[in-house]
Length: 517
Image 1 (spheres, rainbow, N blue to C red):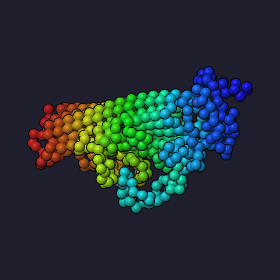
Image 2: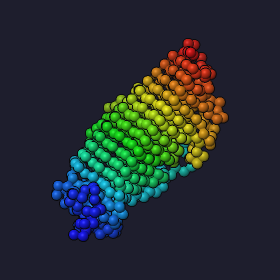
Image 3: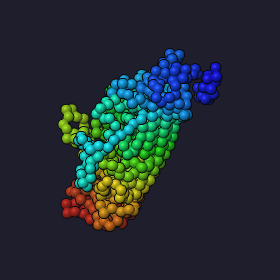
Image 4: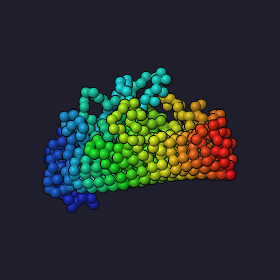
């Protein structure tokens, strides 16, 4: 009776009217050395059989293998309580579906509290022993420095095949994940697939930014109506990733997503519209986000023929730097990239889809400090369409502690149409790099509006402030760029309105290609 009163008080105002299933009533000791999986699972099963309620995890340390949630169950991990993912691979279902918390085809479930879920991941640095085409440019730069190609691997990789996530939810509805700390996951931390009406609020996710490869933060895949808010995510791999892939079933659209009031850090991408998109990611609104200590800030990538569309991102602070060579990213605040897989790794694929699509994206009110080029690239067969940048302040600097330096431009824009840059400022900061050349480089772009754009010359560089090549329909209005170089026989309809730039054209450019008004 006394235990029931304590439990009810601890949960007052949340679920006091529901039945409470305390895992210590099922044999959990609260000692890390003991296997708590049977007690936890029995409490979960009893709660589900009763029609729902709260499974209460009181303060203590509990080690468990894979736990299967049930519909109606609210798993509440109290402050001072930690559930550790077992290091015994036999405690998990299978290599593919391994997870500390697992749910499939459930409804009305919650994982909440003020406690901790800990994956106990550890890593080791070893010489690189496999070819990774996705980071091959970084590898080549690293090789040129003569430095050893050491990279991080999960401890025991090659011996232990089970690398569990912390949370894996498949086709669940009405899901709440709030308040908890998720630490040191050995794979993706929270991975929902085909879930509907998912709320993630007030969580803290951590994995080592030096070592934690494959330990993403939150990876919604084919989900609808997702709200992520008031959370801090610090991860080795990507922090927040939107998928539309066929890992767990058919590739479904990820849509109707809101992200607000979050702080993100990543050794790869802080926010990533994932390259693994073969259907669609659409209707996404992100605002009030602070990105710190990241290798890449905002990343839009499509390698599998999918679509990214109808996205707004606003009120974002970005700080990026160049991490170790084996991470995706280059200290770049903004990144767009459309490719086919075969163009990345050179492997021919039967029935490979066409190049994907990125369209109707608005990025506003951003202050970004970074060390790498913000590369905004479409595809010759699928141009970026309807991208709008407004009130962007981009500051580029050099990091003398980075493994290498390859920044030439502050921003590049290639293979796009109907592109707008309004009130965009590009500046160079100390410390400086001798590699810097151009503020903005544009190629193969149609219908480009630059209004109120102010681009500074790179310190010590004799390069042009802006370079235009094979552009059709460019308007510069009330903008500042001391020198503009125009190249390419397809360049035409370049208009300068209230813009006093010195323009230099190559011989192949038509004489009437540039009009000054």
